[in-house]
Length: 325
Image 1 (cartoon, rainbow, N blue to C red):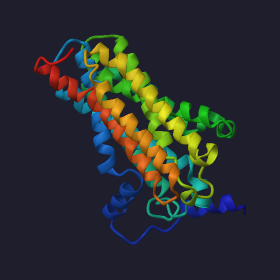
Image 2: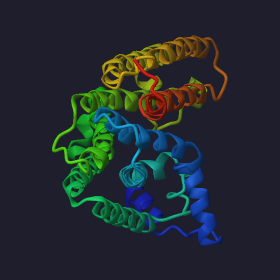
Image 3: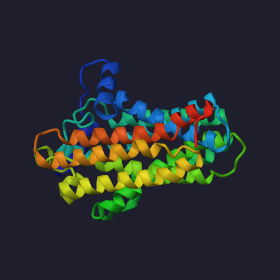
């Protein structure tokens, strides 16, 4: 039997740790989908989607039901992306990252499949509860997720073209945002998104790239065999430059989006963060201390959080008090 075949078989039938089900899943989320880190960003993401649509319609009040459905479905979409990674990366994880939860037997792929199916059922129920008009959009996101999980049926080619690989996978971000915003504009009777929402889709594409590149930049001593980070593929200087460029691109796209809701003041917040990010990148290149990649990853998360709050909760709150351009 080949090495990869052994890995697959041993992973699927690996004995689970002798601990309660609750403890196993708590450990899994802490390692692979930490709620404390993901929930605030997904909450801001959902609030931006619904809040932005509300402001574009000329309203000032956040609809609680729409916001709840947007958050619930968005949270489950991002969870599904993590679950998809567990399946498509399983063989490589068994070979190079046996410490991860699935290869070491903490949870099984069969259990994750049940979680995935349950999350889809919950999305279907919540979307149906809001409006049946959301169901086609839900199906579109599911379909794209399926293509991603199969690496668009051209895994080897994509692996040879990392930029195309990244863009093809980051397109899921605007798709999820479109669904979340549709929780408002579809229920309000609109049949298509506004121009401002279209700009927000561009913002989300670049924000997704900021997060994706930022989490895969490491110092040499932290690189792992079999893990294709951007710092390994392109070198640290190029990877950091790309990170800063897509950050600036997301800020540039945020301006016309902010102008549509009369809140261009967001740029006064984003520009200083770009300056801090550039300083962090310069400091990163000057040392080789283990763990420095966490700096870049943390800044990427803060960047996403600030953009989503700046184009959602903050302008909605200010406009409700008559403040704005």
